Image (tube, rainbow, N blue to C red):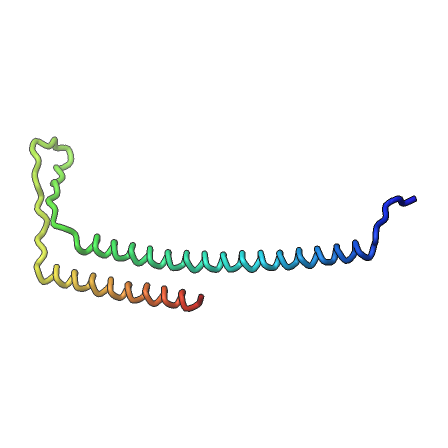
Length: 126
């Protein structure tokens, strides 16, 4: 009836051995994947913090440290412009400009310390 000579206990041993190896590889792969995901999450968080700090810094400098560029005056409504008139912006006092610069420098220093401490904390968790 059965012309194949199979050793059933030996086949069962091989099957169990292969299942054990399968589980070992499965656990190794899952641990590597979770390690990769945690590293990617940390890197993304640090990148987000640094990007946010750079954005805030850029916003501060853009908002408070504008250069005094000459602007074109808008002609009154309904009147065709016959000549271009330059509008001089208000001159900011030297004291106000210096105070704004010092505030911006202070905020940038605080942001730098916060980003540095966040990066060190993220590295120490590794």
